[in-house]
Length: 278
Image (cartoon, rainbow, N blue to C red):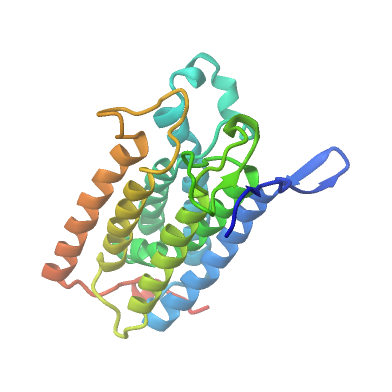
């Protein structure tokens, strides 16, 4: 029987003089690399036309959208007014955090910009991005665990983890790992298996499935995840900000799946005359 599991991992991977390189930053870098490789591989299997310039534009737009959206999302959804009175602290990424829901909004905006630049269908880019996004979620949640943040509520389950610090010396649900498995590995396996079909499933299938599954998993995990201390529960002593923000994702996911089933639009990349093969 497992008990008294202590999380004593160092969030700093290595240091170069005064510069510290953290696992969280490395997780972001590795996620962008792996997501780009899988994005390209699936696009090629689907025979979706995207040349080198298009892939580069998509990568840049998505990276900027992810980082800016995630940070601003945290400031807006979880900042509790602190950042508005201290605006320069928004730039201090070592304090505070990143919000998935804000990052999702940023990615959507970035994807729309990439669609306008490349001429590829926005929904096709969204579908490809949805298949690869769980890689980033998995690595990001693992990094959250290493950082000892976003821990869960106290538990007497045998796999409870003692994080110390502001979490106290009591076993807690390792909700970072719950999310890494469900929002990362499970969604990745489901969407990747669905992507194996050629010709590919209609536009909207994958982004709809991603939003639906993520919304359900996040809503469920929030029951054992400790809400931000400065926010607590929003309604009924159990509804958290994470759950409130996940409900629109579930609705949007269902709507996109219905749209995909009714419209049956084929996946579409760049116009043939504008595409130079990689």
